[in-house]
Image (cartoon, rainbow, N blue to C red):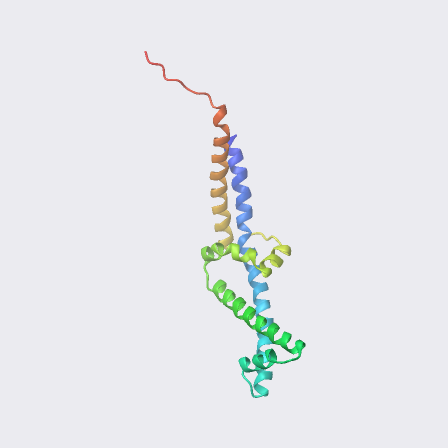
Length: 168
């Protein structure tokens, strides 16, 4: 019975972990799309500032020093946009340069971000046909088997028959 429960636990975790490479791929695609769009906005702002004889910082300073609330708000908004672009671009570069283990270690960061939440909300499971997916499935099976087996053994402790050693 313990082996059956452990096998089911192993298969369950294998199925769950085998989905990580697909989730990471979908996350990377969404992240790349966000970076591309923010790059367009950043480059457009820089071109407009350059056409006006200003650099980015000078243009932002002009926005922020304006007495017009709308323009000052746009300056603040553009500053936040540039910071988000730099942050997401750095994250994308880190992910693209990471190996399978490094990507898995970054899982909490994937789930914590706005992009990670939207990816998870729209996630479509996939059958793992890559080596990475198969390795995750294998590791998941082994880990799930061991955890389920250990849990079953722990739960069965009170019901085991005790063997007494008799001294003659």
